[in-house]
Length: 254
Image (cartoon, rainbow, N blue to C red; front, side, top):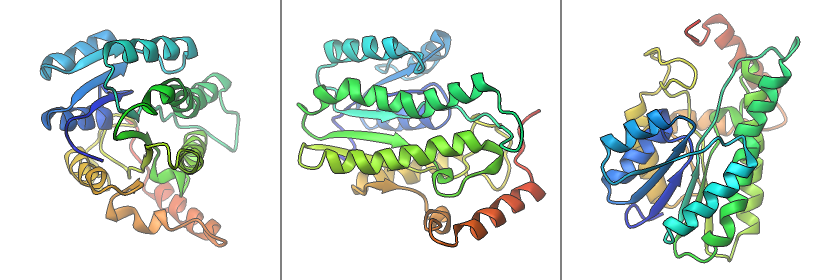
């Protein structure tokens, strides 16, 4: 995709990857609009980046999604890029009882949120030049982390959805791009400085290069083996991956 001259809406843009990507695009001269649930955080980010706009949005609320989509089309008629970034990553126990409220919130935020947001904006995006939909999935779409079973499942679903949507939109002028981050040192789980986590600045730089390259999937070289995992012997790979993390757990801040 082109790296400047866009009008870009980013969900979950007040922290972590969302904020990093928003600020990177902002520095390149794009019109950037971010959303989040907390006005104070929106104000903090937009004040630090003059010219950036913020819109309050609870991505779990389908009526808010429709209202925000209508507001965006009215106030930013040149909107041509949607970045579905908002997500939550609660730990769970697939071998025991999973809190239903947390499970529903995870599915609603990580899967239904992007589906609804995309659906609401697609009629407008189809009328734009250089229109792009970016879905933020995860390396866990390909190799699930057993301790975040529901989260991993939602990201696998987003990968599948991206593949289907890309096929269905072929010839419409709307591109579908999937970003599959590795473990990035953000507060999605716990910003710990763990050496296994990719520094946010490094990830943003690599991702911006990937987006500019025009590839349909953007992921860093370090996760190539995990991206290539799906196959008839994936159980062995997944078990080994999870065993290694069981022996050296991801810090959660608790």
